[in-house]
Image (cartoon, rainbow, N blue to C red; front, side, top):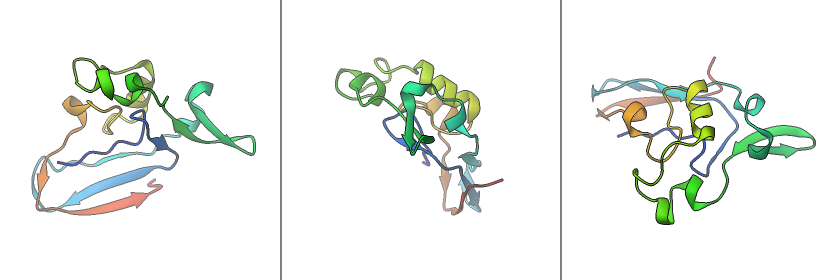
Length: 118
């Protein structure tokens, strides 16, 4: 199973990435995100350096990181932030339990990983 999760699961996102399976069997779909999330994320999630937004980062709390009392799908639903990310990058993981639309099962494939795809 491949999981591509560049955003609100207490990770950062600051560069576009694409993952393309070659060969293999199963649900071998492209996954990735090339959207400029730095431009659309709310100020409270922006990481800045020298006055410029350089990344987006989730709050480091159990509610947003799906840990502790929020460590199950029933207790950790999508947030307004993960939904914003999902709109921009529909085939990428947007939070810890985004399995319904972003889990692809591909067996025996080679992968081409591209940073900053066009």
